[in-house]
Amino acid sequence: MASDRMISLGFGKYARADRIFALEPLVGDDRGGGRRTKVWVEGVGDPIVASRTEVTILRDMGQESAVDASLVDEAIDLAARLAAAVDAGRVDLSDLGRRARRILAATTAPEGATEHTLFDG
Image 1 (cartoon, rainbow, N blue to C red):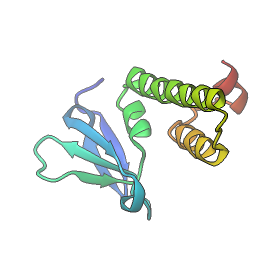
Image 2: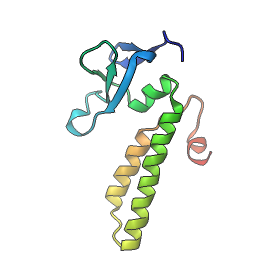
Image 3: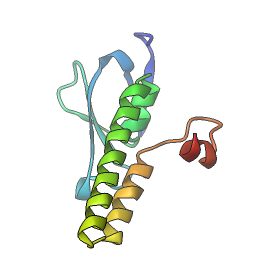
Image 4: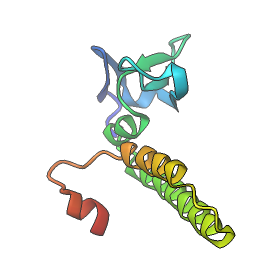
């Protein structure tokens, strides 16, 4: 990663990729109105609120492996919950659907990718 590479945080805000040291996705009532992620930048006292997801910011920073590992962990957790729910005979499709949509929303398609390549490849 180039040390002077600027990353768009949305809302017209940018930060140098090598100065970003933490990302926190906003959830619940904190999220909305374009607010997606808190971004901590070296030298800035308070986190910057970004309109882009942590996954998108990480990808822009060249951290695809961090993104992929996180999403795989969430997908494995979802699969484990589904298996346990089936074994117990108590499948809550609303809950599982909500979790699956959250995982899917956390992904962003690389340029030129299709739905087929995202889910089959």
